[in-house]
Image: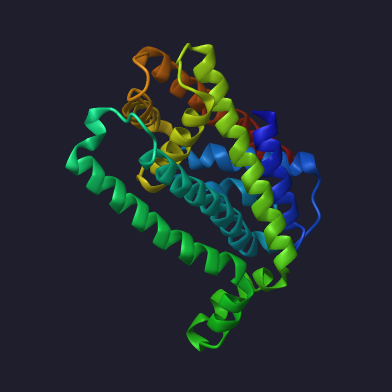
Length: 269
């Protein structure tokens, strides 16, 4: 858990360095505060509201664009890995007969091509974020908006790739977390196959609308639909889904709420 959120904190620290220098500890508190707020919003879109509490008041609106850039990098990795997972899964030998259902096949192809479209779009936006800012600056109607996102034009291609690399490492960390928990709860699926099944799981969780605080039932049902194709240990699959939700969302959100409370009390004093 600490490696997972530590990597995200380092990524946030690097993103924010284009506005102001903050310590790793402060970045860590900021990230967990964002997690706390995001638990109450669809697909954790309100994450920025918690993060900017720890940013200087004059930089808060601009920091929102940095939060979005970091989210795009993580989403891009999730979609790319999920697409690879779909391809691997489709070529897996000895698939259960249920998978051969025509509707499942059609749904899988729809998810694949929709995800592929968004991967291309997000990659173009992320790696060409400077061009996007310059393009928008050419329209007077976006002038006030561009003033708050102009910081994105200061990122070099090397810095963007570094952010993307941290997102990849973090992604591999929470895949490993899930693999370990499934092993703990006796879900007997080969590591190779389970890895790619989990990439599909996170792809689906990224594209399906949900609210963090009520996300657990959806996580449990989606993981069962995927993993139960290769393991009959449904209780173990559900227990692992619950464990991941507690470790990666519930506990960090609780810590984040405490950090926000402490920050508010400190500022009032």
